[in-house]
Structures are given as C-alpha cells and as structure tokens.
Image (cartoon, rainbow, N blue to C red; front, top):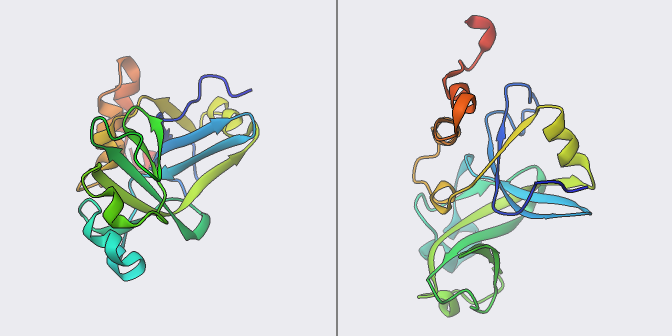
Length: 186
C-alpha cells in the first residue's frame, strides 16, 4: 500500500537513518505507485560542472551549475527536474510531477525548452524503493514525510536545507531542526 506518500513530497532523513547514502538528506519524491517510489536527493551537489557532462544543458541549469548526486541508483544516468513557465506545462519532453514542477527529458534539444522552463537542476542517479519498501522505512522512523516547495529543489546553497525544511514544520516536528549532528555528544 502506498498510503499517504505521493510525488512532490519531501522525505527528510531522521537521526535513526544511518545509511551513509542518506544521512541528513532531503529527497524530492518524483514518482510513487504500487510498484515502488523514486526520488532525488536535493542537498548533495557534486563538484562536476553540468557542461562537462551534458554540454548545452550547462547553460540552462540553475546555479550552482553542477550535477547533484541524486542517489545511489543508476549513477551513470541523469534526471532533470524543472519548473515550467506558467502555461508551458505541455512543453515537449516535460512531465509534470506536481503543478509546474516536473521531469524534463534530457534527450529533448535544449533549444526547444528555452523560454518554457524557469529553473532546471540535473541529478546523477536517484533513490529508489521497491513495492512497500519506502512505506516500511517511514513506519520504522527513518524518514519524515513533509510537503515540498519548488524553491527547495533549486536552492543555491543546500547546506542548511535539512534544517530549514524541519524548521518550517508545525509543532514538535520543528524541534528536530535543533538536534546536534551527533546526539551522543549532547
């Protein structure tokens, strides 16, 4: 059962999540269905410029103009998350995830999307879960599931994204933003 998980939400790693691929990560869910879920890590920029790997797309991406480490699956592939210009959601190669936020097919010639995309970020690899796996991880306390915003995807500096997303949550959930990096030192 997929439950309340849906595309466009954020997964925010809890202190219980010790997998080094996901410690302190914020993941944008791009697809959730009965077969599983797929998302990209928003706060792991690499040092590799997009232009060195994907040529013309380097001129279109949001700053910093680097590839982001989207997750441990298919790291030799790339996913592009874009924010469409209002009214351009039917652009060739664009598939909406939620509202104007969606995936852009990188096989589409870059010149065809100029003027139809406000913002673009490219991720090498992704995070993926099989049927029921993500729901089980949420139930065991590995992830907080919260509403996402387009500006979470396109932040210039992602170092404080985890804390900023937690701070804006209602009630006691916001208190987790103040947890120390190593709770045992507290």
